[in-house]
Amino acid sequence: MSTATVNTAPIIAPVLFDTLRYAKRLQEIGFPREQAEGFAELQREIVDERLATKADIRRLEAEIEVKFKELDAKIDLRTKELDAKIDLTAKELNAKIDTVAKELDAKIEFTAKNLEYKLTVRLGSMMAASIVIVAALVKLL
Image 1 (tube, rainbow, N blue to C red):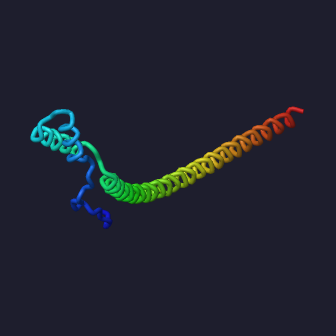
Image 2: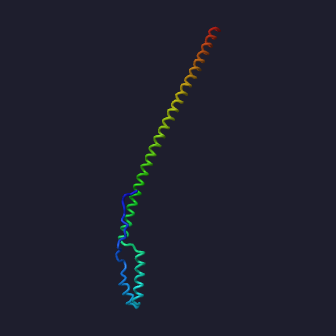
Image 3: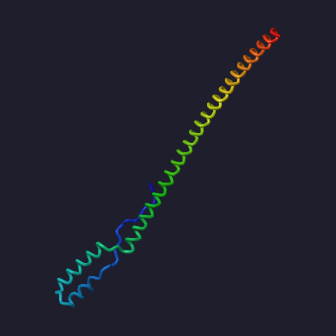
């Protein structure tokens, strides 16, 4: 994904372990020259395998920095994708809410008109019954 590259070409490593000095010291304490040089070479191999130079650390830091930039770019892209999905979902939900609200408004209006009609019919029936009762009372009196 990233266009940044890290130079991974082998670098001539600085001397981490002075084999000559080590071999001379071994000879000074009684080791034969051949054995001292063998121990010194073995020690150098161990040191070279297990210790990192400043250059090694800088190279790794550069590689990590590139990886972090790539990761940041992926996170930014994914965040934008998720934001777009959230926005779309919010619009869809708002549209559904608007539809349900309109349906409820229509049902409420229908129910109100239905109640108004029923009340009007009842009131008319009561008025007619009252007129009949008043007429009957008038005839009786």
